[in-house]
Image (cartoon, rainbow, N blue to C red):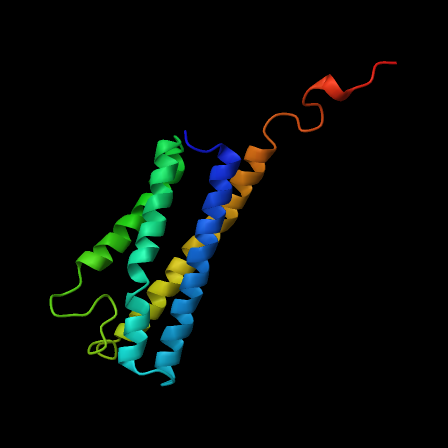
Length: 155
């Protein structure tokens, strides 16, 4: 193990919090495109540059859970990691990325991207509080009041 459990869960909280802020940025940028405050080229270039870091952050967190032996957390995180890999690999040739400026207004793509961002946001919000709970449990492992009676003064 590289980190202790409280440190691992504190790192996972920071990681998930950063991804949550990134997803809020995605929702704001897509809603700006929907309201025509941004053009499609500018919006898609902003969003495409953050898709790979989002995958790397999630994959690294899953890997950390794997090497620390948290099998259930690893298994719960794998479907989202596989979905993000699928999204990146399923980009048709000729497109600029997941968010393509020539196709984002076609066939309800904008609504689909907004829906996917909301699903990701809900997923990460649930996991943020789950990691918070795991960190608190890891910090309170054992009896926090009577750890060692080494500081007790005998009378």
